[in-house]
Length: 300
Image 1 (cartoon, rainbow, N blue to C red):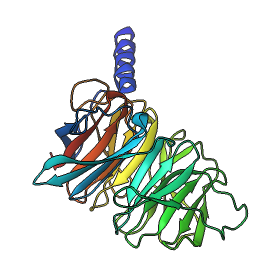
Image 2: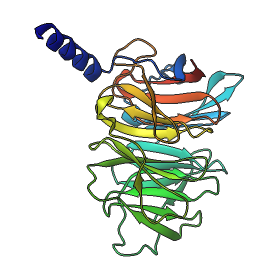
Image 3: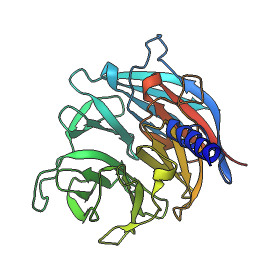
Image 4: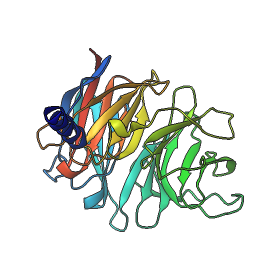
């Protein structure tokens, strides 16, 4: 019995440290890491990333800037730097026209920039229902350029049109711990991530409430903080404190855990925002390693 107890204790320590576990059907293969711009200016404590087939934009938070890259034939090249000296960029997304939207961690407002970084104001809907104040924690943009804003002030998700008008709201489910991020599936379902309770919630395109999608993820995560989906609906959850990536099926089933705490490429240290480029590549902000890592999702 003493030997069994020791074995269980060792397994618990391994899980807590985020040592990689083999995925059931999918695995993430390391492809590349981005550390700097073309002038040798290194990323510093980056928080956000948006990616597509031909682009990547990094919220280089510690340097108070955005860094833009182009992607062609799997080659990533520096394009431009957008200085934001008065802001602390946390989350970044592009709309279909190339405008850049950035959540500023200082003012807790969503800034709008043109493709070249020219200021265009803020996302400030004027017709919000009571309470008419909005404090964003995160946001996503759908294919029609509508915004879904995670409003932690009023414990709700706000849908805002591309013209800035309020469209609808869905309040967080009861008994939540801390809702840290949201994502959209290819079908238009809205996902919410609860970092404390350790579950993902889902609401359909016309739903007025959220329902539980996953079982409690505490068995294989420490503090899940960010999430995204790919074109097949697979869900990728970033375990910030455990420095790993949890892979879930579109039905919420556990498919595996990848990566772990470390400094070598393919390992992570307190990762942040994650995105999918529309294909098989997953981009992860490896914050405390001051880089963005790119993985390819492949079948086992």
